Amino acid sequence: MPITPTPPQAPSEERAVEDPALLRTFLLGLAEGMTASAESTDRIRADVVQIARAYGWEDVDVVVLPTIALVQTGRGESARVSLRSVQATFRFDQIAELAGLLRQARAAEIAPGEGIRRLNEIGAMPASRHWFLRTFGHALLTAGLALLLAPSWQAAVVGFGLGALIGVAKLMRSQTLLLVLPIIASFVCALIVFLLAPYVELGDPLRVLIAPLATFLPGALLTTGVRELAAGQMVAGTARLGAGLVQLALLAFGILSAGTLVGVGEDTYAPLEVTTTLPWWVAGVGLALYALGVYLHFAAPGRTYGWVLLALVVAYGAQQLGSFLLGPSISGFFGALVVAPLVLWIEDLRDGGVPSQMIFLPAFWILVPGAAGLVGVTEAVGAGAGVGDFSAAFITVMSIALGVLIGSALYRFVRRSAEELSEFHIDLPAVLAPSDEPVLSRIASATTTRASRRRRRDRE
Image (cartoon, rainbow, N blue to C red):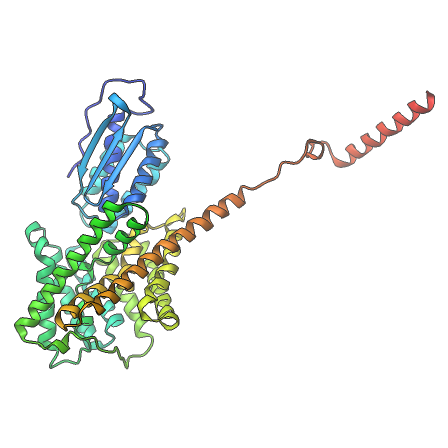
């Protein structure tokens, strides 16, 4: 929805660089855009307050929830509050444009009125990829993820076909369809996989299902919710966790409904040991296909592909190492602990930096917190496994969230320490302070002065 500038308020003594009404609308639009970019509420609030101060306005308060944003300027009787609900979800090309606008706003390099115009343009941006390329990208994304989760060529082919089907459905603009699409997608995908399983060697059917449903999995939602709870954002964190659990329940309902219709037994939902005869380099092919699919489907800028692929390789490698050293239950912690500083470092690069959401989101699917939750819920209900599998899935989600939290904190600590160290200096005493006079001249002058004093004493 376009952002309409608020009519100017009457002049007041608290007016700073810009009209507070216009500035408030600009700040609210930035908060709305960052929320649509899946940014955490604590960071949105910190950024908006920082931008307000850059424009010379100190009396600003911000409240951000997952679907609503409020900005207040002024205090007492002069206080004014603007509110806006957030329903949109930005593509990667829109997130990149918003990141550029945020950099300008942090330095107060753009007028609020011009910033509002830019926000409206970003919200109305058409996708930079044709619908066929975006659908093909979703199919590649699914095939690559299938090679990582259920490593077999059969699973990759089935994943490619299901990914193309889901990719077309996701591009439809019907709001009614989008509301029920997770259930429909999980039901259709499960129905096809369960019908093919007796005739095609697919391995674990649930792992095959994860790949085409990856973009519906609430991994980022669950992890961000845990991070917000740890940061003291109780309302936002609880809301995200609740929404993520409901999303998992809807997906599991679609899978179980398809299984009931086909008549599969409880053993179909039981976890199977993952075995593969594929060579080791297939994982690299899967990561490359996955990164290319993300690049095409989410209309990411061209410069992001290499960074996304690097983060995916690091996340996958760290998770595999963590699984070998610590076990599969908390391997995601190690992967998140390593990839979080890398993502933040990439974002902070002055030339060619990439917004963290554009890398975190694909990395979350590699670390599979949402996949673990979906498998846990489905096994707990379908296979009668009770709460054991769901508890294991919950531990996986928590470990990844804590890894992101600790990794981010370590990066910020190291960065702050490095900045303080680079600015560290010791002021020399005045007698030792450097002088513009050459050293030899100062020595000769001092020697002459001492000789004059001795001659004066001798005469006396």
